Length: 132
Image: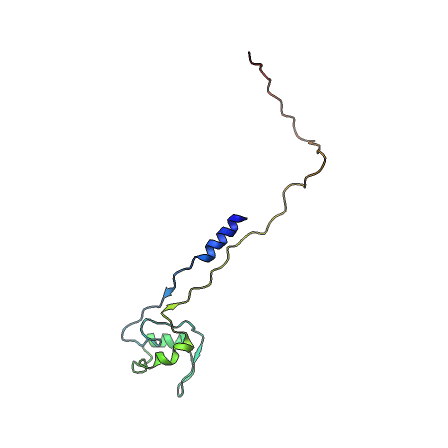
């Protein structure tokens, strides 16, 4: 039991390094700005005169060259909070170690009186040789 507790403690106390943002081509627009990426891809960004779009596809459009570079100068300031722009992607929460359910004891419970060992063969004893 102590081993399981120590194993669980070790598992949850270790933090994995965060995954860095994917690279993009220099001549393409990174909507979050240099060295940052979207951490909330399903969040909706809306700007007047433009259709509302999810942050993930917006980032893909920028990396694909669909967003003009002149928009890239002010876009990071507009989407930073909505899209959760950060220097690295969040690390998923650790999952617990799977454990098996306890099983019933394979033997009968102890009794107060001796039990009959019927059905067991008697083991012959070795002859005792007296020491001279």
